[in-house]
Structure formats: C-alpha cells, structure tokens
Amino acid sequence: MEKGIVQVFYGPGKGKTSAAVGQCIRAASLGQSVIIIQFLKGKDAEEFNFLEKLEPDIKLFRFEKEMMSYHDLHVSKQKEERQNILNGFKFARKVIDTSGCDVLVLDEVLGLIDVGIVTLEDILELIDLRNDYCRLVLTGRELAPEIAEKADIISKIDLEKDCS
Image (tube, rainbow, N blue to C red):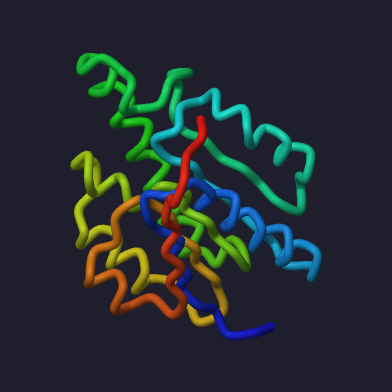
C-alpha cells in the first residue's frame, strides 16, 4: 500500500465532494477500505444516497439529524445540530486513532471552522493524528494556510460559469 497523504479539494466551485468521491471509488476498486463522513449537508443530501449501495466497500456516515443543511436551519435548531456534528468529528478522530480505514474523507470539514463548530487547531490535530498509511481527504470552501502547509495535494475548484 502506498504511503498515506493529505489531499484537499477546496474553493467556491461545485464538484469538491464529487472529486473526493472519485478518490473513494478508485481506492475501493484497489481493495482499500473507505469511510466518508459528511458535515453541514443535512440528512437529506440526496445526491450521494447512491453511495449507500457501495457498502461495505465505501461506508458513508452522516451524524446530522435535520433534513436541511446546517446553514439553512433556524438558530435554535443549529444549536441542537451542533452536537450531532461534533459527534461526527469525534467519530472521525476515532477512525484515525484506530486506523479504521485506508481512506477517510471528511466532506465539508473545512466549513466547520467557518461556522465555529471546530477550531483550526482541531483540524490540524486530526491531520497530525493520521498514520502514515491513511489517506485523508478534506473538502470545503476555504483553506487555511496552516492546513495547506500540511497537505500533500491541493486542488482548488473554481466556478467559471453557473447557468442554474
């Protein structure tokens, strides 16, 4: 198995999650175990429900209970959902601690910093916990320079045109 890396897909464009899922499908086809943990998308992120069909090769976890994304929730509901999201982040930490998979995707984890659910230091700690044989894939809109410094591969996804 190749040495693990930290890979980041970030930017204002659409397709960050799809790019990360592509890495998952590639890894699963090579016999590697894959876990995806999604954040800030709500329980009803329909576009990726098809991933459940790929279990047990690719395991998808969502800890949020509300159907709507975190950003669309009323402040009172955000407070409740915050704990669910933190449980997902703690689970990610446990997966890394126990070498629970070959590839771990933390979808929209960078956004957790923006909304104040976790700190930059929390994510840097998570990266440092990673063993040498776990590929860690992070996605989100913004990329802090401190995370960029620890990343091995960074892909910025920009939006050039939006016809929707």
